[in-house]
Structure formats: structure tokens, C-alpha cells
Image (cartoon, rainbow, N blue to C red):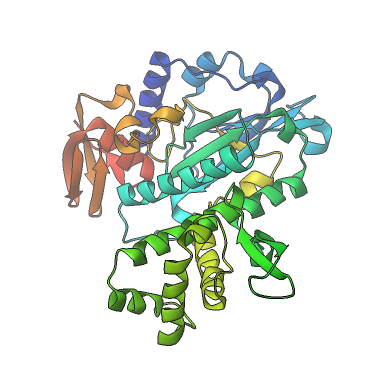
Length: 391
């Protein structure tokens, strides 16, 4: 990046912060702060082990330093500005979840567009929130668009603050479905066998919550899908599952038809062939329903995370705290564009062809000089794909 480009971005970031009111996280003075300045060196220079006292009033700091990236710690400390983690005196940490589109199953880098990647990431976010709300019952959650390719979720319930890395890893394993045992999801009850002298064991999926309920939902989806098909199509559909031939497929269909209410109540023991199918569906449900979070972020009690309200120095987009009720409608490629960068054009120079989807722009720019909306220019320059042109 040329110095002219850096100077331009530094100046426009400062203009943004002059117009913005950035709110602090809870217990801000107990947290470590860090930032990355706009430097000429090829590597990344992180300034960290700062306290809020070191930075001063956050608005003044942002306007004065106009940093490329700004972070605060998940952890709270006795002395957040101490140079070593041991000397800081750890008090507790928020539980942080990071979803990054670059690392999600179903995202193909180089093929999926930026918009497609972010949409896939939002789907993963809703799955994560389902776990945090329904399975864990957390109540103090903050959802944040990272300003780049994903989302952060901050959990600040008092019950998580004292968890060390191992306890946090258990939460990671649960939401990712790691080590999930099919047999552990099955409840067993001894009941009197119809027409038999000896009791039998009834196996069910708990429909009330957790991974068991998620698996049961997929079972019912298949039951409903097959009920809408004619017999030939239903048999073909069932034979797509490994280990199911025509005979077992007919047995499964018959069991579904004769035991619909039992299956809806969670009974998966209506036929041996049906039970085997359920085992397969459960394995598939883990792949479909898990939340592919970045494990090191959650398990690290000292993690630094982006400050909501700051700008992402790799995109020029705002790191946004999001209202839960507005998540469905949130469009990061429109809603996270800072007002500072709207309503006027700048000139940029491109050395390579680049495709941009941002705001009202969806087009491929050929190499050369272009007049573009400033938010597009800032995005391309922050990415390192363009230099500031001469006006």
C-alpha cells in the first residue's frame, strides 16, 4: 500500500470517528485494549497491553490515533496494562464466539461471492444462537457483525465468567457436535410387550430439547417428505440412504404409515429398519445443525475481540452491534457502510481485475483508473487491491 493511500484512509477513518459515538463494553476499565495502526511495514504491528486509562477517552483516542483495527479483551483483570498475562490478575472472561465465512463448510473460496459467503455465515449464526438460547439458556448476549466476513457473539452471563479453557471447550464441542454419541441421545424404557410374555425395551428420541430434538426434527421432515410422494418415488428416496435396499425401504414405509403418531412422539423403535434409518439421520443432522465456530476464540480467556462501533481496517465497514430482532433483515453489504463514506466519489487505481458487491454496486472493475463511490474505493484500498488515484 502506497503512503498516499494510507494517508487517505487514516484521514477518512479520523473523519468517521469525529462523527461517531462509540460505546464501551461493560467493565471497560478492567479490560486490556489493543489496536493496529496504519504502518508502512509489510507486517502487522499490534499495540496491546493497554488499559483504558492509557488510551484516554475512547472518542478522543479513536480520532487522535485513527487506528486500522481496535480490540478489547474478553478477559477482565486487576491490572489490564501489565506486560504479561500472569501479572494482569485474571478476574473472569466473557464467552466469545466467532463465525468466519472463510472457514465454514459449504463455502468455496474463489467461487462463492462475498454476499454468498456472508449469507452462509448468517445461517450458521442462527444455528449458534439456537444453541445459546435454547440449550444453554444464556440471557446476556450481544451479536456483532465483525466488519469483515462474519459475526461475533459475546456472552456475559455471570455463570460463564469463571470458566477456564477446558470448560469453554466443552461448550465448543457441544455446539459443534463433536463426539456426539447416538446412543446418548436415545432414551430406553422397559414396557410390556404387546402379545409377549416378557417386557421389551422401547427406544425414543427426547422431543423436548437439545441435540435429541434437533435429530427428531429431521426424522419428521423425512417422514413428511415421504408422505407427499407416491410409493415408487418414496422407495427410491429411501434407497438413497446407505444400507437400505428395496425390502428394507418397504418395511420403513410401512412402519411410518402404521406408527405416525408414535414417531411424532419420539418413538424410533417402530421397526428395526426404521431404527437403522434414524441412526443415519442423526449423523446427518449433526453435520447440518452444528455451529462451525472458531474454537480458539472461544477457549481463549484472554482473547482480544473487535470493538463494536469501530471500523474494520480490511474492509472499511463498521463493526456493528446488532439488535436480535433485526438480524433477519440485516444486510452487511448495505447496512454496515459508514455514512461518512457515502454520497460522493473518489478516484482509485486498480492493477488487477476485481469484482465488488457492496451497497448499490455489483460489478467487475478492469485494471486502470476508476471513479467509484467512496465506500467502494475505501473497501478496495483497505483490502490492498487498489491505490488512491489522483483527483
